[in-house]
Each structure stands twice: as structure tokens, then as C-alpha cells.
Image (cartoon, rainbow, N blue to C red; front, side, top):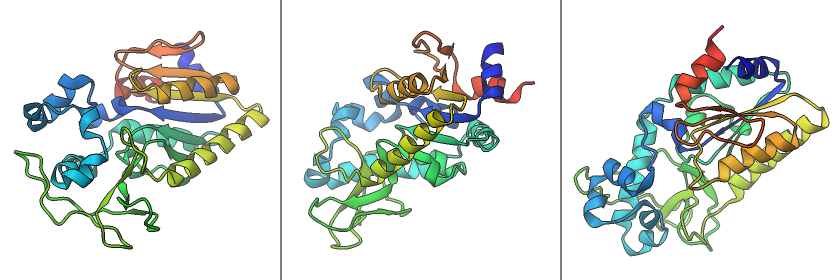
Length: 272
């Protein structure tokens, strides 16, 4: 921790990377394993439907009440969730760095936006549940934000119509998030975000700025966030601080903390 504090104090730029574990301290489920998912969503346990089976765009065509029940419940939950204090600590820390900061997350919950991070400094590689797109890939509606709440039966987790509709053609809408086997996801919003992140990293490298990568709650099951953290730290010759209660190990030079996000961030950013 002493070494990590030295790195944090001396860093000129920061990249915050986050997986599902980042939201646990805010009260959000992380869906770890089938049992963890079914514990959070008992009605789907009764149906024997796993997360990877539900997170499939085919349900929007074959059973929109099931599809919007699953995603509508999550959309409502994320809208009602208050980001934990660690988000604010990271936001304020990034604001003090001479070269600024950036966020890369696989989370679709929009919590960084809600915590006051600049939209131009956040990359959501799997999209954002509060952004919608038309289910029909040929529709030119693009991507739009919607804060409309979906009526979901808490006992069955099935949604009641009317479901969110396309702003252009009036057909069924779906969340602009990457699902399993998803050939219809519109990625341009996330692509633009990642282009900005790439430019930020390039600027840090060009200036030889001291970089710290602070990663929280990113597991190995879908290692997108972990891989980016490691690659950016390597390319920019920065230091990776990995915070994870179950899988904290990293490449040589990683400063690993077997901890939840808030506890580690308090020691890292708040303790003198």
C-alpha cells in the first residue's frame, strides 16, 4: 500500500478500469456464476435460464416480455442505484492529474456518468443500458438515450407492454449493449469512445507522462478489462494497481489488493 500511494501521488495521468465488481459496493449484483445470477434473479432459476442464455437478442423477437423483463429490471435498478463513494474519489483524483484521466469499463449500468465523470472521458466497451437502438438493423434511427422506466412484474420478472419503441420507425427497441451472439449491436457509440481512449493513451505515451492504471472488480471469466489494463500499463510504462477480492494477481510489477473497491480506494486515495 505504501508503494501504491507513492505511485498514485506521483502519477501525471490515470486510467480507471472497471468490471462488474465495481458496482458491488453500490449494492449491485455481479452475476458471478450461475448460482450467483440465480440468487439475484430467482424467477430465472425456476426456468433454468442462465445469464448467457438470457443475454441473447433473440428473445426480443421471440418473447419481448421476457427480454424487456430481464433488461427492464436491470435498467430500473441501475437508474435507482446511487454510485458508491469510491466513484467520487476517483473522479476528484483524476481532476487533479496534470494530464487528466479516462475510464474504461465493461459495465453497462451508466454509474460513471451518474457519478459525474465527463462523458468524453468514459469508454463503455459493452455499451450502456440507458441507450437504445432499433431491433431492426436496417433502421436508420441510430442510438438514443431513454430514461423511460419499464413495468416489470417482480414475481415473474416479465415486462408488461408498452415496451420501448424505436424513435424513427415505431418498432420494438432494445438496449444498445453487446449481448451474446449479437450480430445486431450498433457499436458506433462505443467505437467513438474507444477512439478517444486510444488518443488519450497515445498522448500519455508521447509526453512520457507517469501513468497509473487503477483497475477494480474485473474478473477473468470475460477478461476484456483485465487485458486492456495490462496492455495500457505495459505500453505506457505505467503501473497497474489491481483491486479484486478473488482474482487480484497480475503480471510482474502489478500492485495487487485482495479487496473490494471502496475499502482499497479509501486506503489508496483517502488515507494520509
